[in-house]
Image (cartoon, one colour):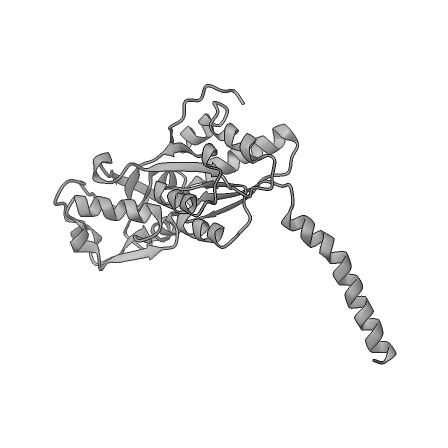
Amino acid sequence: MNLSMKRRSLLGLAIAAAAAPLGLAHAQGSGLVIFAAASLKNALDEIAAAWSKDTGKPLPKISYAASSTLAKQLEQGAPADLFISADLAWMDYIAKKDLIQADTRVNLLGNKIVLIAPSDSKLSVDIKPGFDLAKALGGGKLAMGNVDSVPAGKYGKAALLKLGAWEGVKDKIAQADSVRAALALVARGEAPLGIVYSTDAAVEPHVKIIATFPADSHPPIIYPAAVIKDAKSADARPFLALLKSAKARPAFEKQGFTVLVPSNSAT
């Protein structure tokens, strides 16, 4: 090995040695990491910002995506401290993989699914058994989360099946990888109608709700939360306690969520 090559080799080893503790610190960092359903973004961002201001701690790192995507990432070993799903099925999925601290699991929130259109749309739809959704689409697509994996899409398909509208639209669906992606399709005018949570519609000025699906047309919409079994942050349980408290309730209710836990704490 000539002198130049030896110097480069030693320099590479030095850089690797210097970077290793940083990498380890990053992997084992004490900052709170949250995996949360995409529909929670507005409320959870507000709560996290207030928590950071009150405690002086760094803002939690929050990954928002479809619950299915997040659950699969957790299964593959993605590091997180807290998981909030938009349905029971994906929390059950990771619970069966022994990935959560079972004693922390709680049904945190409820929601509704609605039919939306661009804000300037003149469409009118009366959701009832046998309603003709295909006619309302007028040859366009119905934007929904993936009906096999994204919770909002699964709830939407269940409702359409129950109401007898599924067969007419099953080949006219623009399936998105999250409920917020489905919302965006309608907001941009790329789909004349979409099915999203009422909380999503409430934060997007370019869409309007034209009908709400009956609660008995689909399984109850429940958002469970739990601390991950291998959580590294000591703040995971306290932050979950905050989400269950009276202090967090206004942020959730402002976005249209129903808080399912009694808020008898001022944490």
